[in-house]
Image (tube, rainbow, N blue to C red):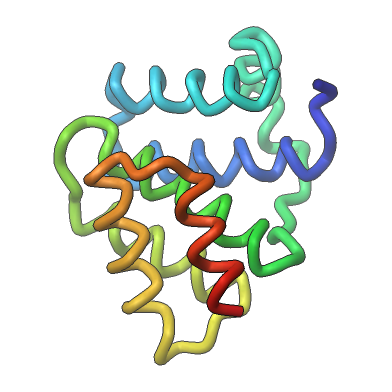
Amino acid sequence: MALTPELKNHFLHLYQMALSDADIGLKELEALYLIGQDRGITREEIDALLLQSGNVDILPPQSVLEKIDCLYDLSLIAWSDGRLDPEERGTLERFCSRFGFEDQNVGPICDYLLDEAFKKTPKEAILLTVSNNL
């Protein structure tokens, strides 16, 4: 799969989450590479993107399902080291707001996605639940 502008943005969002607690751990990098592998992106492509990240405009996803997809991956990165730091929660909330969700919905959306990420719920189940409630 080609590294489209949308995928570039997605991985830059994930990288920002990994940086949010000021300590990129091995588990967070492994989770980032695993998400890339699931999307057909190689470790080398991700590394190259991260090295040039200062030269890329970061844009939010467009559809609700694309936004939830990205937010769920962010939640998985947040939990990848086995703990959720307040900075990671705050970063997820900022992304949720930046993606255009109403302020009163940000907390419940983040709670739901973080709970499901902790349980390692398959993303397809998350997206199906969301699409059934749109």
